[in-house]
Image (cartoon, rainbow, N blue to C red; front, side):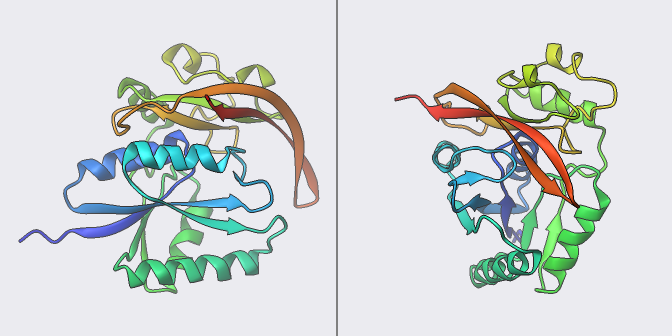
Length: 232
């Protein structure tokens, strides 16, 4: 009898977590129980992506997998974040989920952090896209028929003109040479609204563009966000 591993997928609503989920759903060794996403409690949005909670919920409904949301306070410390994540992971273990799926590609420090945090809880991490070529992954995502819109850009790396664009082979050739085409260094983030694992497309419309800045290690980093809304 086949031994099936129950997993949760670390979810952002973007292309990398979608491609990781796509691969896991094709693997008969796994059963996805949850899409696990962290939400800024004050703004009711996915951090760094700026995507509204209701868009994430609609993704889960279309995919047919429950979105498990952890609401984080606006100014959460690393200590508080670790405690809240630990509590969530303990709940996962009670549901016999001991493995979390991540869409990371090549940031080794982040991979080690995730592995260490889960290891202390007796859990493990799995990275279906790890160390694959970014251009190949981008092309695979597009060739599979997924539709994703750029919703945030790091303004020191990409211009505002990329906001609202859909990932395509044409767009691939427009990225500057110093930019990772999968945005693995935070150059941009996406929202996926249609594709093979979706039962129906997420009907969205574009709203206004907002600029803001995050402080990291004492440095202010400028970002621009595109407001996406569900069509009514």
